[in-house]
Amino acid sequence: MFDLSRETLDAHCADVRQFIDCRHSVLQNGMRVAEVYNSSGLTFTLLPDRGFDIWTAHYRGIPLTWISRGSPHTADYGSPWLRQFNGGLLTTCGLQHSGPAELDDETGEQRDLHGNFTRLRAELLRSEGYWEGDAFKLEIRGSLSEASLFGEQIHLERTYSVTLGVPEVEIVDIVSNVSDTSTPFMLLYHFNVGYPLVRQDAKLDVPVSMTFPRDEAAERGLDTWPTYDSAQTGYEEQVFYHHVRQTNSMSRVLLSNGDIGLLLAWDTRHAPYVSQWKNFRRGMYVCGIEPGNCVPEGLNAARTSGRLVTLQPGESHRFTNRLNVIDGADSIARSVSEIEDLRATGAPAEGFRWKP
Image: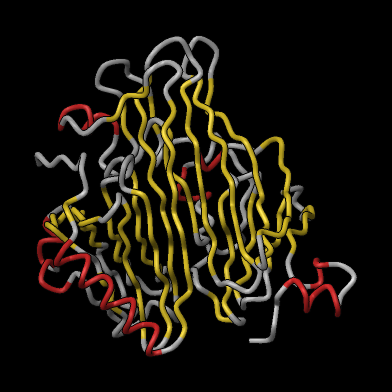
């Protein structure tokens, strides 16, 4: 890697956007996009009109995620979630419901798969770049609200942060209930990884305390949950719920294949759960790593199981996720060793509740 220090850049360039920037544009279908790069090999595209989530992402030209045909799709409340699923590196689920489509047991309200968040539009988009010592930082911010008259009023402020020359993106969300009544609160970060990072012999390292299969299909794969297979016709998805260990509230998992991997670290204080989605179906080959304050069981089940989080009037929760590309066999080995140490010495994440 070439020198990206402040002194060197001051001597060789007139505008730091030569090396790091967030460039906004509008697609032919009217959707806003924001392209982020930072001279690290990592590039990604934000979708302000689809939950301000991450769509395509690449490292040195290699795709990190699966995308659906024709994406990015414009938001449509009349079309089901699966027809609008962009794939992409991050699809946020919530904010009141995450899990299968259902009718509310108490109110009869119809809820679609994984809630409304993916249909929300970001407002007050802004970005700021600044030097912090010898490192140049770029932050991209946006605000989203899930709200209805006489109903929920949930506000989310999201900040993406990247550093010049570092293949990492940090995502910080502050979620607030600005209503005068309490509200159910389910938030799941659906990080989606695709070929070639996920393929035969890929492995997920997790500092597990306990692992629970979602259903019979997952029970059949319980002994092989850390490993990944080749594409298969008619594959039945498997989902596992992991109770992870943490130190200073932080946990991490690594999905790796050969000498490249994707490391996800997150703050477990309000996100004690992580779900693993394995989907090897041909043409739809995409797997998920999903930290959150819930498992994707739906609001009805979460209410019954006692896992449902309730956000009180004026209450705010802060969530931090960091994605880092790990490049090279030695770096992969160090990350695996750190996770093994965390598994051996960390404390189980607080707030994890399990009653099938």
